[in-house]
Image (cartoon, rainbow, N blue to C red; front, top):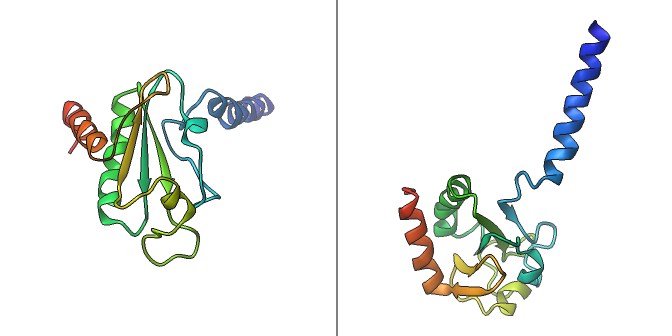
Length: 145
């Protein structure tokens, strides 16, 4: 009996460890350039088909970026049609917002957080201030403050 419980437990760990990630668990809110922070990135390669994709360019040294992060996390839990991809603009070892990083230069970033919003078909629908206003409306609609 004890051996069967252990075997079932191991099977359960296997399923949780290997199958759930394959089903996309945790994919709704993720850093797109993990391990390549600050480097150029092709956003279209990271979009999730069939979902509204919000791309958030951020820095850990940006207080407004830190303030909106929990709201974005909450948004993806409340709206299954939305995914958030975060792009860290800082290269490793920096001590401040890295405006000269390759990704900041690639997208001509002058302020952060900076958002790009793509529709379910992968078409860019808004960016910059327009995307920020659209995002604020989405947060209000989902009663997120």
